[in-house]
Image 1 (cartoon, protein in one colour):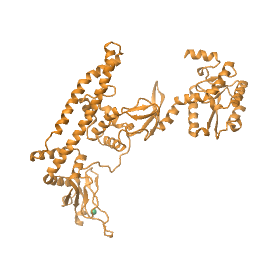
Image 2 (cartoon, protein in one colour):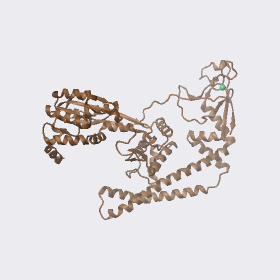
Image 3 (cartoon, protein in one colour):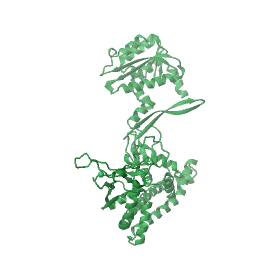
Image 4 (cartoon, helix red, strand yellow):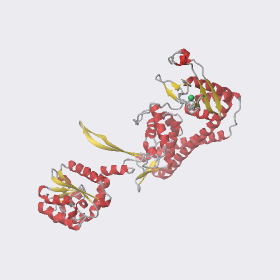
Length: 531
Ligand SMILES: [Zn+2]
C-alpha cells in the first residue's frame, strides 16, 4: 500500500485521499450499442454519488445516452457542454476513463482541455493530474487503453453491481447455504448432494409432525453433526426450515452501515428476492406447507404473510363428505367460537327450479364420532392392515434415509482422518484443525454404532410376520387414533369412497337459534360408501 503511494507520486498521480472538498463535473455516459440501458445509468449515478459523498466532492451532472456506434464528439452534446464549462471545475468525475472516451482523438482533446484549465480527472480507482506532470499524462494515455478493464474491475466490486447480479439470481454474498455449493463459473448455487439429503430429511421429519427440538434430538442420536461439526440445536433446524433458498429462491439483503448514537449498526435498506434463481432442494409446495404449518404450530418464523381466513387445515373426513340429497361436496368451516362445522349445503338443486338444497349442517365432531365408531366396528381389520403396511413402508423409508446420512458422514470422517491424522500426530496442525480432527475421531464410533443398529432394524422389519390376531387389531385402532389427523385422513380415504350425509329439519326447528337443544340434537343420517 505504502509502496503503491510512492509509485503513484512518482508518476504524478495523487491518491484520492489527498483530494477532498473538490467541486467538479460528474460525467455519466452509457452506450445503447453495448446493451446498456437506463438501469446502467442509474447504477452509475448511484455509484458515483456515493463515491463523491465519501470524499466530500460536490458536483454538477452531465448525462448522456449514446445510441448506435457513434462515439465522435458531435454525437455527444453533453460532453461538448462540459468541455465548454470546464473552467468552472477543478475536476471531472467519471466511473472510468472509457466513459469519457474510447476514442483516441476525443481522449486527446479532453487531455488538452484539462491541461489548459488545470482540471483533474478522478475515477473511483485513479486520479489523473494532467497539468501536474508528464508522468501523469503518460499514465492517462496508457490508462485510456486499459479503461474498459478498469470498468470491469470496479464494476464487480460495487454494491450496486452486486444487487444487479442478485436480480439475475447469482449468489453474491456470504457462504453458500447448507446443501448447496457456489459454482464459480456461473456464480449460481448448485445442489450439493451429500448435504442435500440431510435437508430433505429434516423437512420430511417436520411434515411427519416432529418439532424442531425432536428433529435435532433425532439427528444427534444418530451421531450426525452440523457443517461446523456441532450438535444440532433446534435453532439450526428452525433456520433450515424457514430458509427460502431451499425452494430455489435467492434473497439478497442490501445492508448499510449507519451510526446510531455512538455505535454503528447495519440496517437493511433493500431486499432483493429472486425466485427460481437456482435448483430447489425442496419442492415449493412442500416448502410452503412446512412454513404455513410452522405458523399454525406457533413457531417463531421470519415469514410475515397474512394467512387466509378460511384455512382450517386437515380434518379426519376431508374430501369424504357429500350431500346425501344433491350429491355435492360439503364444506367444513369454523364458527365464531372456533368450532368446526359441516356447512349447510344450500346448493341450487339440479331440477332447474330456484329451490336450494335444504340439507342442514352439523358439528363436525359429532359426525366424526359416528363414522369412526362404525369404521372401528366393521372395518377394523382393514384399517389395521393398511396401518401395518403403511407403517412398515414409512419406517423403512425413514431407516434407509437415516442410514444414507450416517454412511455419508462416516465417509467424510474417514476421508478427513486419513488426510489429517498423520499431520495431527506430528503436531503439524493448527489448533482449530486439531479440534476438528478430534471431534471426527470421537464421532466415529457413535456413527458406526447407529449404522449397525439401523441395519439390524431394517433386517428385522423384512422378516416380520403379517398380523391377523384380534388383539393386534384393537391395538392397531389405538395406533390409528394416535396418528396426526392428516395421516388418519389418508388411511380413511383408502377405506371409504364417500360419506353421504343428510339432515333435514322442519322449518320451525331450523328457525331456532343454533344453541337451542332441540335444534342441536335434531337427528341426522349418513351412509358410508366403502372403497
Ligand atoms: Zn345438497
